[in-house]
Length: 410
Ligand SMILES: O=C(O)CCC(=O)C(=O)O
Ligand SMILES: [Fe+2]
Image (cartoon, rainbow, N blue to C red; front, side, top):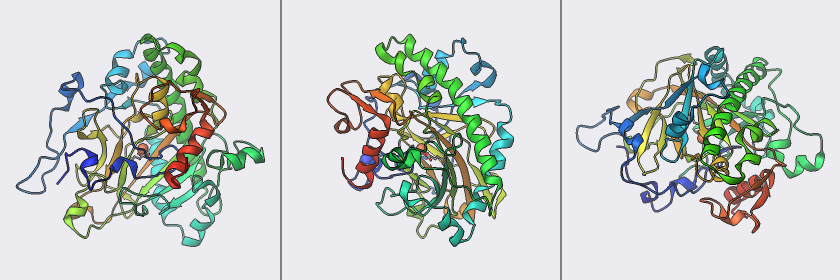
């Protein structure tokens, strides 16, 4: 059954340190905000039984609905949404919020997500041509290159990475070799799946536009809290001027569990990690069998989040809602006013899972490689990577992070 133990209790290794995913979501050890006894949002966490596989045993984790903001409110720059921002993304929030009624979103989502199994089923030769080892597989097709909690390579999901805003972020060769995971050009399967490029760019651009609107409201919330030098590094400006945004089309292969125990892991499809950038847009996962959409076959399958007081909860939002999560960089720069959240994805259980696939799209919005971040003196993560004066460009910071997790270098 599900483990309600804190992650560090598993197998003697912190599971949050394990997964090294592609751009935007290097999985990192983190200390969460200090646990507190009972918080306002806990009232929303009233347990709802989502699955019971065995007659005896521990209850499954509760399922929690995201705080939702209607698009018509979000697009008003001056509207006071600080209550909802605080409830969803503040120090006691789940670190995820959803936006409802975004025009065109449901159609663009479906168009792109239905292409994920088609990418995954291109021939091995074609997929190899679509790989980009020089960017550490941060552009084009990536499968089995990332490390999982177990330390094994992740073969459960495949990703297609591209910058939906800029095909060629820079032509400066020095920058391309210094920051390959952001500066290399996009790769598109123009001969084999030409519709991918249009669908990927359309959804990515929409998620950036809506993300910018949300960023504005996050800034208003943080400024109301009186955070000193935040102004010059506002989330909205940071995202608006960046050339580093990265979309990731994810395809989760059907999982066949050899032992029931293995299938019970809450992170059986995607390991625990915290996105390291500024803001991540996320679509609701689309379940399929043989590339045809089906309803989610197991209510326990999907996205899970670790709460600030060390509980694991399943998080739900509607398929026509667009969700956003805070990344570590924003948590640090907002001095903890906006909090990042560890998350993972659970596959359906064996009995329900035969041939079930899932696709989704994440849009990682992060500072430009040349933006200097001014870190406060006390930060919850990666203190050892920050120079004594606290100033480092996002490009250098990301390279150090990638080295830390891929090669153990700092
Ligand atoms: O599949 C999902 O819903 C989440 C994916 C994710 O967390 C990531 O790509 O960073
Ligand atoms: Fe993530």
